Image (tube, rainbow, N blue to C red; front, side, top):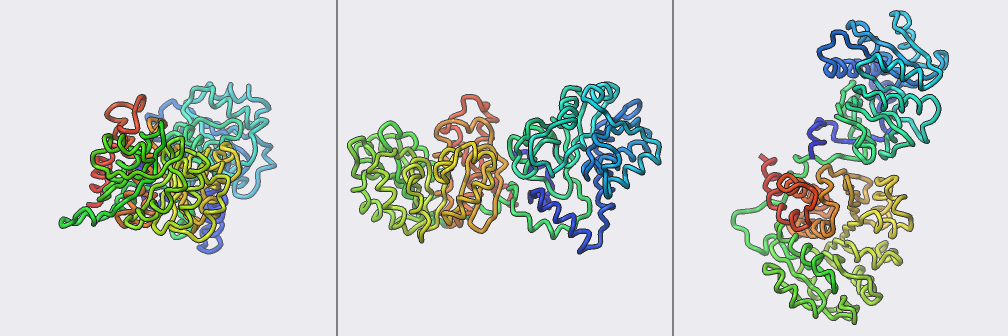
Length: 525
């Protein structure tokens, strides 16, 4: 959760490399800000960070390793300021000087004029020898334009940096990380600090890139803030999530907060049904009704003292059968929202139930787990006119829905979430480290809460129930998804703080939801 606290409120939007290039260009063309001034301010911010990290600076030396592009140009500016401050500074240029162009070339010329040593190494061994004499390394090698595996002298330089044991400050983004996805292109710099300009790049926040950034420092270099509204990805803060929480009027009764019907459970998977239906109540809904196979209802009635249970016709393997469709639809007429799929099983007749239910549902549906698996081979049923829909897949389920692999999903999680929301006209909650929420307008929200303790069976069922419970209280599906993901992750953080993430159970997250909600309510003032 602490990641958003390091980022100022104006910079909660996250940019792609292409968006940032557009913002740079328009700052110059539309607002009259010289591009050379933007580079100067960027380099100055890097210099200021280095000075803080080095303090005290007496006797310290800095190596600035630079490529030939604008990222290198930012490094040249930082090197000039370091030299002027009396810091022993060496610039290691990974290109022939004559190949440096534009604003970067003008700042390289300033280095020569100031008498700053500029080395052009032939090998990684030369770079490694230079770094032995330094206290800190500035990574200004590749920047945000990288598309393809790092190779040649750049790869050698990154290896030398990572092996040096020196403190590392990265310029804009650690070299080797894809700015748009967080993918590592073969090798990347392991930074202790990353000074990023204007807005954080998506790749700094998404894994695996997020593991290599160190502390993120957002530097305002003077690009007009109104341009940032065009960035399509947003990092959710506690203030934003708290503002979405539904009101709790003092004269409320249980009907005020809605009813959620949970269609869930199968033999061997009663826990999923229990967790999701109880999470509905923990999230603040007034009534939770669990509709489950008839033979399992007695078990669920004992297991869940606060949840109403109903039995549905079942298959010979104790899963909900297609014969349950009329009864389920009748039951859902009383509901404010439906949660469908937790521990449901994928019996062929159960899949027929799901396929029949979805086009006829008249209230918002949270479709999770086996609900998604049941329609994976027939996902076109989601493409027509239907109720407000929230899908909550993990990468494997997402891959089955889109007809790609889980690895394909993970290689560009934002693209996958947007594709699902567009194709199915729904809100997509793509679970995982940095859970994503995308809607069919093209907006994407990145959830910063949660920890590795959530990587255990049942936590997804808790998330589905939480979102359903928030919808029942009047939130739009997209707002319920954004708020629900934040609350769910925060509950995991609270539980982990008490007992540690190893061995944490879904039930620990479930019981921490009220504490998470109380903390968020506190952000509302």
